[in-house]
Image 1: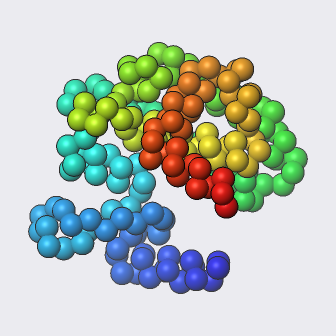
Image 2: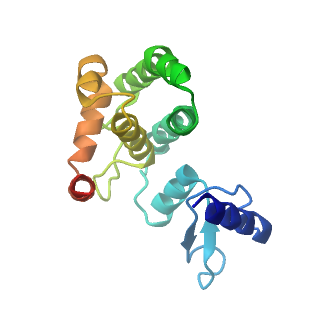
Length: 186
């Protein structure tokens, strides 16, 4: 409930566990004293950190740069989607869908066309051969846009082929495909 989240957010901020008051908060036994749970906040920074700690980040800094570059750009799209999905009036949603979203997705299409270094993905981990945090973020926001009706899979395929290829390929990763199937069952 909203009240429960308000109380938890206040606790996180007041305790210093997460001064940003955002979710997720991941508790990791890593850092200066591996016996302490360290709260990690901000989802992109947490993903990047965990990739580095577990040795799955790319060994070439440029390949990690493209992940960070997309992640930086992704955040404004994510914020726009959250507002549109949860707070916007119908006329705002219509304007977003017809004007701002196509402009934003066109920008990401261009970025993926220029910077995708591993097939449809920006880069993949040399250790696991799976895409990294920027691709994960983009997959997530594209899925959110599709599941909330701001975009369609067909529209993505017809208008944004590089994004569609990444989205489709990411969805075929076995663990992701399993999770997607479990969501369809609900």
